[in-house]
Length: 268
Image 1 (cartoon, rainbow, N blue to C red):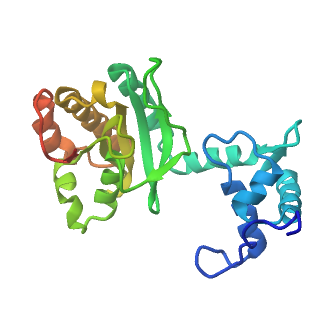
Image 2: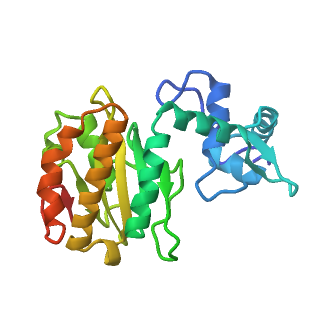
């Protein structure tokens, strides 16, 4: 087999999962080949991950480097360029929630000593739009821009419950106005999450606290977290022009029950 031939054929621009423009699909495949922990990748590895010939990969890398989406390192490997960072900042601003959400995340993280984050739905995934981590060494660590399956975790349940209001699977979450998770995505992690809405009543995202299950997963801690999250989400919704009154019943019910276990919205 020639050295330039990948182990699998070059992907065609098929109808499903494709834009119909092959060169763009291949360029996107190169960018998507970088995982959350990949600071740099070799040409060989990029060719392997995308299934593209090395010659095709090299040509596309040159074009992406010219546009600022890829940068070539001094050791000959390739990393992500500056343009995705600029676009990510524009993407965050398009939600117009940063000035409202970020101070609340800082406060929640300080109060509980855990990771506070804000997720939005992207198809079948939930994306970390903002996050604040505590200084303690043992903590839940996630990155802004990281994606997780939407069907696992407290924030995923909240996003599903309030973006699919007719799905009966999430009725309890909608009634409770919160959800919790104990080791669903990561067996060592527990989390609690609540919805945030805009001026039209549409779901904006999920405000979330998460921490190591042994420390954060006790009924009293989850209860206190839910009470704080509901209060913060109410303030965020009001600041975004929404109706804070929709939280009142849940706040009244759970704020004085922080020390007791409640089954609503909890999935063990």
